[in-house]
Image (tube, rainbow, N blue to C red; front, side, top):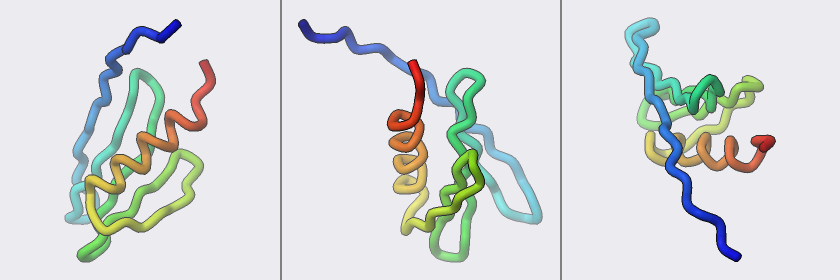
Length: 74
């Protein structure tokens, strides 16, 4: 039996810090992490404060989403 697809709303909050625009991602009350510009690249900062550098903002967002779905507890 297949599962019914469920839409999940991801909230993006932009915040200025030291002249940089930081993007915070949340699903309901759960923080997925932050995307911080780093020169020509971006940093994906996870809730446990580990950092992963990516080549694009889209790649950093996808990394945070994958990490959330991998480690969430239902």
